[in-house]
Length: 517
Image (tube, rainbow, N blue to C red; front, side, top):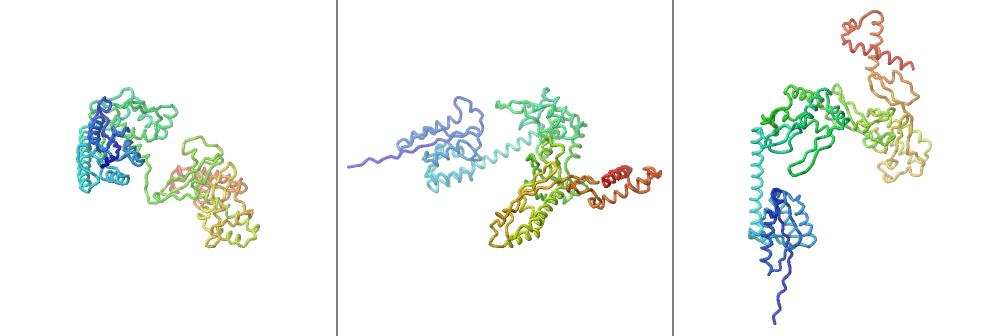
């Protein structure tokens, strides 16, 4: 008696792909042709238990150079869910054109015991010879893709050298016709206005603020595929791209080269050169290695104003000297900032004040603690460097109109090199975790800001040596001027400019007034 062999049914997933989306809107396109050929092959294997899956795995308009495709991602997911036993494609390069990606796919196929079939290429992935055949075919597919890419890049470079516009969205003020830029009369007036207003205002930032105030937005356009874009406010980066684009003087740029274009210029060469010179002069310059040193900000992410707006580290460079600040995000993002609330704080000044108040707090708490371990910890903290003290203890610093609040992280107060290093020994001791103290802002002679107690009067001790020197100069020159000497005579005698002498005399009046109050 003979028993019939049971044929195991295999679900076959058909995968189709086309690199471009051209022609996919037709009733019968290349994806349909690929699927039809694969269905016919599966039908020929019906005796082996093959049946086509109803799920569609199609990637129209996706390159085979990577696996970032919705169809292939869904296919891999269904393989892992056990829904697919065989993959059928028209040609192997429809699945992928990359050897590395194919290696990843083969690992997935082997892990879930999935076979792979190409309708037009006869091989079997379960044998070493079949894998060798696949690798050879894929090597040629990858080679073809790379050669095609090089050919396209060479064609683009050659076309741009002839002044043609062959890739990308045309700049504002132009549209593309037969690979040549044409002037769009509905937009060109805006481009001319941007160049004119930039020269008048002198900065891209001022230009952006003016356009925002007038609610001037980018023109709305429709791509060849029907996608609508534009209509948003201009960013500074977008304005820079307009002012830097040589297309407006009849040129075509390709990488670092600029060629004569087939289109007519819309901006005069004189205007263009003035704009480029202004952009170059306004560009930030790094003159010394000092400017490239990393910015160390101890209170970064911990400094806020009373409204919860953070202060961010920033710096400026004057005479090759870096001056570091914490600047309110209100100012950085051009929002309204409370008039009486300090918005720009020198980093060294606020860090010095925070360190000083923490040390005063620790010293004041000394008599209230009787535990020897606590005394040991307090002494250890007092011996700690200012940078480490702030980094370990400060959780948050809040700037109010007339007082500063420091929130301490008591868990950071841990005994070093002892068994209690992971235990907060101040728990339950009444040690306060908040320091609040009043402050006032003093603007010194040279414009620097000093944060001090409201009770403290401004004195010569608050002035730097160079500030005291300039005060003495101002008093001396003021007396000479009152005695009958002209500013020009003082300048000639002392060897300074008239602007410096005049400002120094004026500053001496201000400083003496503040010292007397």
